[in-house]
Figure 1 (cartoon, rainbow, N blue to C red):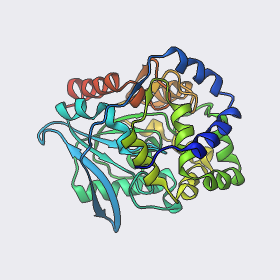
Figure 2 (figure 1 turned 180 degrees about the horizontal axis):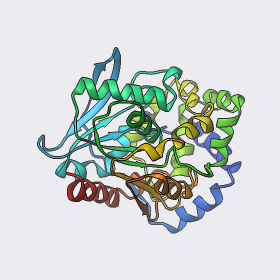
Figure 3 (figure 1 turned 135 degrees about the horizontal axis):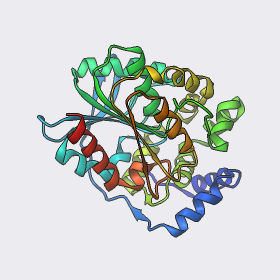
Length: 314
């Protein structure tokens, strides 16, 4: 089983030391009650869809409302381990590693919201999914917004957060801004490999939760040897985000915008700007949660999704 080793931790610490936001996160982590994500096995499988091997997981009552979860980066669908049992008790849940992320095939050509939106169209068509409640944090948010804006979609409601697409001042963490601006930063980050990237994200993005051994093993296996490809997601990142932000007012389906109150990677002010631009939006801020809010507050996150799907949008 792959673990975060000394090299991973050392290089992650070096990145944290040049991140102005680390002090705030470190203080919050110190005062929070931390926990390790329970080791719940998510039943994953790989299917060939549009000539690509795509990893997904499915569970829950077949006649329940359909919730589709999209993977974050540099994690995978196993990032939803903490809320998996609660969600699948009430909903039919399908979790998807987006092409190029997690354990799904892909390369740098897939590293844009528009490319991911097109992939979602192919995946949903292949699986014949309809009346989807699409839950899309982090990179999934860009993919979800691009999908509903550019394709004849099958989505009944959106739940998005912690990603690109918010109008107004788009506030990002220092390291993300550097990755977006400078090619040498993407090149250097790619050379460091998957471990430091995962360790950095885990520390800067989490307030309460600590990933378990199964999750760390999965993340390292998923991105081993291809960190340099995946960081191309950040190439021209602000331009890609602005292209989405300029059109979010066109999204008229019910949309829940959620954000961790202590996210320093994508400032919570982005949530307010996005919610204000949406014709049919609702905003929910999760307390004591960072960028990986669904992992920091798995119970609150699951209750939020179940309430959203079950009361207002069946």
